Image 1 (cartoon, one colour):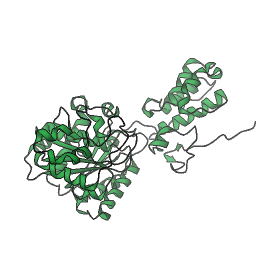
Image 2 (cartoon, rainbow, N blue to C red):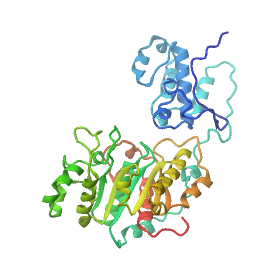
Image 3 (spheres, rainbow, N blue to C red):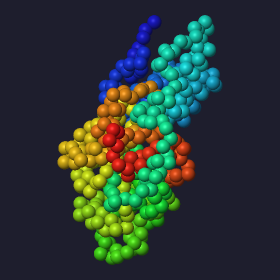
Image 4 (cartoon, helix red, strand yellow):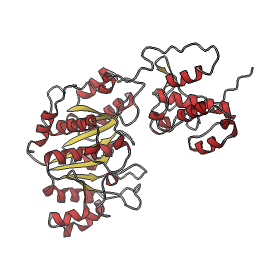
Length: 407
């Protein structure tokens, strides 16, 4: 028998990983999409994708890219497969990791088709479901302190507060966090809260203007140009899009071209902040990245990252970046958000790393995956799962309350 190596990828074996993301071939058809687009190489769902892609190649004689599923279904060799097996292999190469079968499901299905196959024994901890401790991952208190958080949020503010939200990388969930934090603050305080899209980055990511029903085509640059005519809130509101929670959004993108970021000037931004200050005690600024112009106006910072080992490291690096931008004071006033916006199976967060991160700032909040938020469309507080709402409630309380002596 001749063995021909067709390609290679990374896999988790006995709890260890065989390669880093950067070392893996980027164009490989056996590489799961989350590895390419999200950098998630350390989840078992990625191994299931790779196995399914290899088995499909063996069954049909060629490799298949993720966008070729319709053609795959019409392939005569694929059509000869048993219906249940064909369905299993298609599920293995589904783009969304959560929709793939587990390793146990694949092993059981394949062993049932092998004469004399031995029962598969899995390691005790290698493929176990995520535990409550792993979901808690930030070593947060499990007690329900919702009433305390609510009182903290509703307490009067001594002065107007500007909170800047920055993401450690694209896709970390910075805009979603801005939207949900603003909605919770406005709903709980029963007052207007302003969210400004200060992201100049053009791309296909969803901007905060896409998270509300737009009430105007105008944006930040339009408001800056019209400030001489803005003499009262009714004038200002012509440039804003309200959310039913009480959050008000100042967009910075084109309605016809949502991926195009508005290129405002430094003076535009400063003048808009000054003009809106009399009408809003709380202003959130979705900056996406830590930039000096935005940080010079910040009283608090929210660092948005992912709930994985790389996300912890990137959050630490973002704090270091604040120091290099001459805002070391913002580090201790920061709150870190770890989003489970992508599957979290296959890793645990190092407790020491989590505590080291928490010791530098006001606190750390983990937000569980929520299907409503994952839709990347308009959002409503009433559609959130209770655990997701509670996470944003805690985030709001950490930002508005006194800094804990021992975070």
